[in-house]
Length: 121
Image (tube, rainbow, N blue to C red):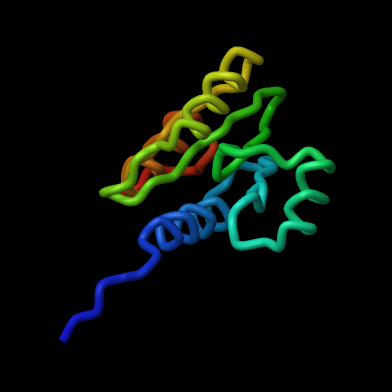
């Protein structure tokens, strides 16, 4: 029996980070704002007071004076209203944004942004 993956988006995310580690261009800086996950009400309130906001993209990337943000989705994933709103807001602030559905699209987007060395087959 073949078990279905319980967290397909997490697999995409980890694979993208593996590509960034192996193929990222020199001086590329990237991070994941750890907004998700279950939190107690107190911890949630503390994080909110520190600036955590709903809808933050999965990866923020910085290179050569440019800022990029990418929302990663599994093949069946959808962007939430808060994610769409945040992408709109940071796009208006001058950040280059994208939504990538599936690993291949995410890798292609990072290559198109010239943030990865070489091309995936």
